[in-house]
Image (cartoon, rainbow, N blue to C red; front, side):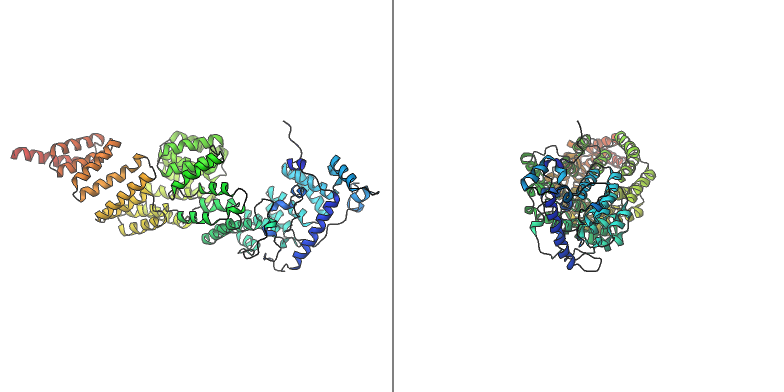
Length: 639
């Protein structure tokens, strides 16, 4: 199959005539002059810079302009386009004015334009099409060569902007920024946006913030819906998103969150901002759903589809029933059964439900379709670790390290592999490397902290979990792990404090509810502990968790019953656990202890013997068996 030399839109849309282009240029000059008159001299962008922020960058594309959309309102230049005279064309091309020495009718001109579309274009526009096509085909040297030429011919800010786009795509960020900030280009909202984007690539965060502005100057500007008919992303939303990225890299997460939320309120199509909010857990689970309802999905043509897609990516602990409704809607109405994003969302739900095998199968299905979908890899790695799939972890880590060493998730996979084979020092080193490559990589920070917890280095673990809690304020996991560490240190007061903080964020995690019950159990508040264990079981049932997931909760509940001397309920609870898993030695020990209290010495002895058959070195089971045998012998002697 041959590849066309032009973009499809260049073939399917009529090319404007020179008269139409001249009218567009005249209209552009009038708009630019009007906007420049109210433009301040300070470098910051203000709301008086026309309404360019309401449009997208699509309107300055030479291809899209041929569809007769209004010319770009956000390239503010008061310099008119130079006339197409012979002196402007050193290569022997004739201008349209010289080529048509005799007057022709409109119908004749239209017929000539159809038979030879390029004949109606000026030399500058032909060069622009050449430059744009080279950019689309990634022939960047050609695009730079032609872009320099057309900019020298026209001195048009739009041509400077597109040449800067070429430099940006080739990684020459300093060169692009220098071109954008010359002359009057810094008064253009689009040019300043691209200049700030270049500065972020150069890690010059303060300068980038100064370029894009510390706040949105268009916040109170009147809405002009006629400027957003092209269907693109509003430039104002992109600028809010970029401002949020800058604040995030300055560790000002509260301001970053505000900027990302504002970007979506301006334009719900700014998915980058939505992904930052959700992936980095900048919002509480309940806050995510409230914010979703506040967005203006009715303002776009496919609002229903976008809203449902967004809803599937929200926190799975909160409002999980809505996920199934959204999934059915996407499958029946839009036929998105095999959408990778939808499959990933379903895999996340399985992980929350502790259904690790189902989650693993969905992850592998997604990776089979797209092996470079790195966003699903942290979830896939977690499943492999939970299921002790060391061989798959090794193969994945080796492949990623060989082919994608520049990706932070690569070194996360290596760290998870070393953690699974209990090489903690190596694991910690690679988790640290992943977090240094991306300081906002939550999985790497949690893994780094886990390495200290595994070795019993609780103080270092507390420090690492505290950092994760500061970076990812919208997730309950760091506070949960902090509470578990203090529980290991028998500091029940601090453990309860951190678990309460986690509970304020997420009230529907069975693991969290179980840990809160354990703290109260150790504080001898048995009634409260029993309440949390029962609540954890109810939540696990609502989430449709795997039955093995609630075994520790049931065991703890049985011990709470035993401590409260509710022998029958304790006996029933432990027997329920044995019906699910018969290989838990502590269950047989607990059953034996209950039977011992009920004076069922023979059954207690059998229970302790079962426990020792599974764990021969269990000192508690040995002590209890010795006690049971002594009581049994004492009973026989008395008999």
